[in-house]
Image (cartoon, rainbow, N blue to C red; front, side, top):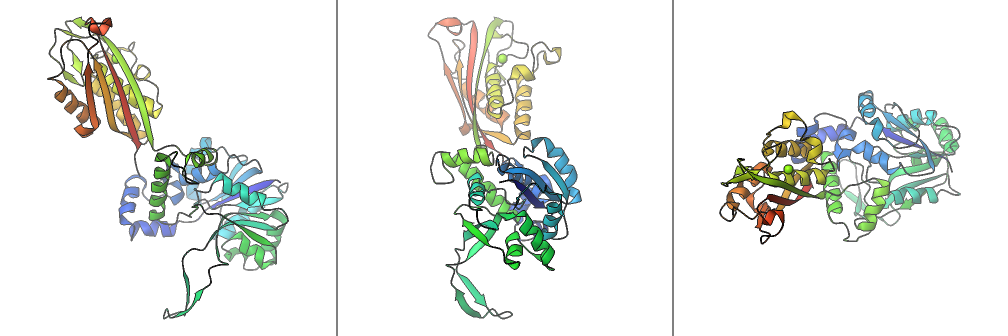
Length: 431
Ligand code: MG
């Protein structure tokens, strides 16, 4: 089975833009803060643009040999920017038509005649699972087309046009809501476009095929594969992914560890919580100020270092870098670089926090150990805690400072060094 994938992504997103102006104000404002007036497919979902997430779902499907994306001219620079992130085989983009069916036809003309099947999937349906795609492919044998669909759940009323008078409650038993992917035989789809004068008005491929008497079936699923039409849809999808990602192992079909693994293959979701561990030791010498947590502790000895030697802030900064996978502070602030001589560690922490924010993460809790023989920190701990909380932008209740001695053992016990450890919990920053 050789399949060409077509992604119609040339919609103007007018309902999405309208929703930003009208009823979805709360979500809209959050979105607008960051990403005003762009295509809805450029908006971020779970840390990546919607269109990239959609494409990722298909990147490891072996039957798919090429991918043609139908776009608007405005999306061209965006796609160029993302090109390195797109791992799908044989990706090309072309200009879409005035309607969805027009876009699909433009793309269809560009697909390889070597493909016997065409799979069409909406650019704005990023939550499709690898399993669903495989099921559609598996069901295609002996049929002209297969579409993913969901059983209609709400009660449906048929009403009189104009006054809303209910004529009948429709039997929903045989009703299915058409979704994508839709998989169709290439030659049958070409024929359908040729024979149907109203082809360019069709809202889905199955409809085109039905019109020429082809045999099309549904594959039903129970998951959630919405087309993101309004800002509320996007906010909902973000909330659902965030919840799934933070409840790994709780085990429903789609949200448990198995679901997560499947998504790892299919759409590459990353958990919305991360944890980083940090550690630092500094030698204690006479004639240096003793910085801990950004404040000076009265002491005859201070920490030796290229910077101000604040082992606590270094441990916290390293934990943050660990959580976001950005190396360690040695890579960011080399002790061989003269420009970092005597740098304040509060500045190091600020740089690291900015990088975390740039990548969409922020700390929500930190736990620390300070291992030091003298001076005793009992009276200083509240000040250290208050200042670390201030540096991290956290309430004090979410900052823990614990002080230990080594009972006279080892370099810390002998008063030669201070050691600090930190565990930082980070969360994904919402839209
Ligand atoms: Mg250090």
